[in-house]
Picture (spheres, rainbow, N blue to C red):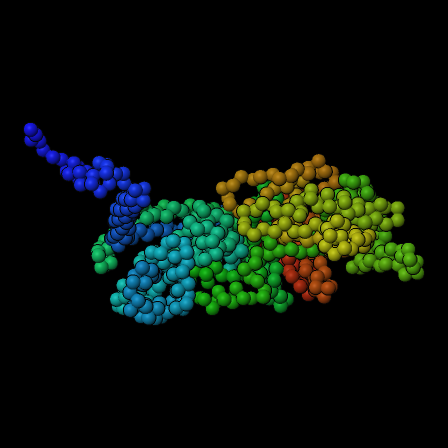
Amino acid sequence: MFSHRDVAVEEVLSDSLVGEYGVREVPLANRSVLFVGVGIFVLCMVAIGRVVIIANGFASYAESASRNLTDRRTLEPPRGLIYDRNGTALAENVPSFLLFLDVRGFVEHRELEDAVLTAIESVTELTAADVRDRIREAEYGKRAGKILLSDDITESQLIAIQSSNLAPLSVEKGFRRRYSYGPVFSSVLGYVGAVNADDLKEDPSLDVQAIIGKSGIEAFYDGILRGEPGELSQFRNAKGEPMGETKEKAPVIGKTLKLTIDAEFQEYFFKRFEDGLRALGRTKGVGLAMDPRNGEVLALFNFPAFDGNAFVESSRSAERKTYLNSTDRPLFNRAVGGFYNPGSTIKPLVGTAALVEDVVDPARQIFSPGYLDVPNPYDPSNPTRYLDWRRQGWVNLSSALAQSSNVYFYTVGGGFGDIGGLGISRLYTWWQKFGLGKQTGIDMPFEAKGFLPTPELRKEKDGRSWLLGDTYNVSIGQGDLLVTPLQLLNYISALGNGGKMFLPFLNGERSPEETADLSAFLPYLNEVKKGMVGAVEFPLGTAHLLSSLPFPVAAKTGSAQVQNNTQENAFFVGYAPASEQPPQIAILVLIENSREGSLNVVPIAKDAINWYYMNRIKR
């Protein structure tokens, strides 16, 4: 008798298989297991993917919503002011109206594009293409919020913008730069301008609405003049309409700079130089003055000059284009970046080297009939002639410097007769001792090194050998020897102060920095000084015009042949008072393509030195 019990589902199913297969359990096929596993895996991945998509979408929507609700904009601080050594303001900030374009609002409201661009063109000198370029620059710099279009909107333009009711445009109160003396200090100060694509490539962290230094002191000290930007959060509703703002971080005004420049002196020097150029019908030149006691730069300017205000006033775009396209290159800082043959102004250096190296003694006389004939070994009847600028007769070191005898310096530089000469190797060494061929280290951008020739460089450049004539040429400051005006004046300052080479500087908060000490050669420097004083005091001295001044001046003039000897650049270098050790001012005057050589630079130098003595030293 059977007892009753519950029958499980598995038993029913298994019994149904007995008759067909003769077994109670049949294993699943491998293929079935695989299909089931893959199906489960796919379902899991789909589920996980949906979760990820939803999560990312939420984050994206949240971020988008945050952007829609809040715009963060950099607040540029007023730039630091720049003063001269006596507290005269050279670069200031003046109140102005600033025109901004909201990039997102412009993009989102395409229906307003034509009206917005027309409004911008009516109140600025920007074209539609200019505006689109600025937008691309903003997007490149990842600062696509508000961009600055102009920092000098007038009141009438302000009213026009406000009455247009164009949401992407806004006007705010701010500041713009003003250069109080226009072109007088442009070479020192430089100018500022809006960030462009090149600036962003160099420094992607820049904000597109920032105003940065582009040249001069404004560029070199941009990091401290700009200060620290602040941050403003602007809130919008779902329609993108402004709802209010919160200042997250206040901007910190830039640091004030006090320069070593003497504004009153430079203004006089600049205008006197300008008058001299106008009288000559010339346009290019350099004026420099330093304090030989410490390296402070007292005056620095170039001609042609430019007005830095043209780069901060949007209404002066035509003037900007003239500066940028001029073949006279008014934006080029000739004082620190120009390459020039120094001409006879190199002779005090060569004379010092000749004494120290015992090539000659100060009293040794050399005869100059107005030329030096060097025998030609291939044709004795046809010597090579090197000209003096006039017949000098018998000259020693002092009179050779005073009268600027070429024959004397051909001889001590390259050798002739029983005088062996320095030779190019020793000349090169002494150029370096006096700081030529390298940057002085002045706190200005774009300083050049100059060029010191050697036989090896000549061979490498054009395959030619160095000849005796090449040594003669560089011994009088011609040939391949190239210096900057600043290097030239710096070495002259060292001659005047007894052999101390200083780093020239413009920031009045810096301390003097001695870069070389040649005071061990003081006895020889004093011999050279006699010749430079003689250039003023001797009746035949090349700077005799200064002899009427009520104080002694040491000077050297120079004329360098350029443009295949069709033009002359004229130099004056000197220091005063020559009776003091060290003197208080060293000065350089350079006129490019001067009509009568150094005769044209001496009167300018005389008046500038006299002004400084009467207004700064004597008082």
